[in-house]
Length: 372
Image: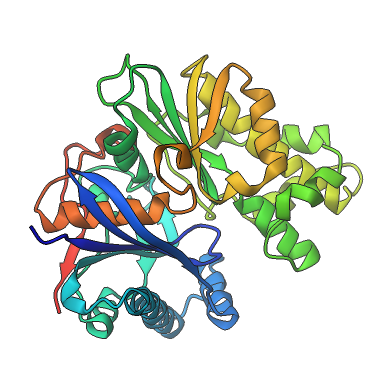
């Protein structure tokens, strides 16, 4: 039987790179043949960031960014294919999440709920000559779901067979948890709040660095208790699940509003230390709301923040914390592999049940198919 290959791609909330995974499946279990992260050129990152911050509302910028992100994704897939001497006919499908620029899971005064990802899949399919699956979130939203987080459905399928309590913690820009407890037939999951996004935004704003390597800058500061209390007062943290969030809420404007309420200025490194404490505390609180012991498998870029991981380990002392690498999945690759899996399900015409994680009323075919 011919081995079917898929390519899964995404650029996450932190927008640090295009993650690209070359994957096949053995009885539903992913086999990762390669994983690579491709740099996003700074001019494109600046353009997309302006859209995410809602500073640029003109359609020309939106349309241009959509095509340029599509081209970047296509070039990333082509590089992966060339690296392994693969022709277009060797790839069953590319699963492209694209780049989220706005996520509004709760209705506003106009009763609108929507999510927008850019990275034109027509461009990807045309440039690579490979069928492309994209637009993974909006069918779930049409079915009453929040369209996020989607990764827990993949976590359930891959890591759900456990005789003991297990939880998957994804430390992306936003943190999400998937509870896979034996006491739950299918488990559940949701976004807990910020993981890396505020840390990345603040160090970029303050020092011009893309991220806080190892959490070293945060470690040099001291937690400001008043600022932490002001941030913990955010209503999102008390909302019941299903729930999802992003940079539309947790951004520099949100942080600067909190900073203006302080009686005196806070040192930049102390702000960073407090942001790390915010991420660790809100994640740990949500986990211990559901489980008191068991195994936590960590994935996502935040696993490389040594100080964050040390703090989480201290707050979650009753758990055994490990990387998904111990179960055969590079923690950096998990989400890219997930979108390869989603694309396979779509190509097979199989609905995915996101309802325990998003609140949708029924399982849905996750993506649209863009044929060559």
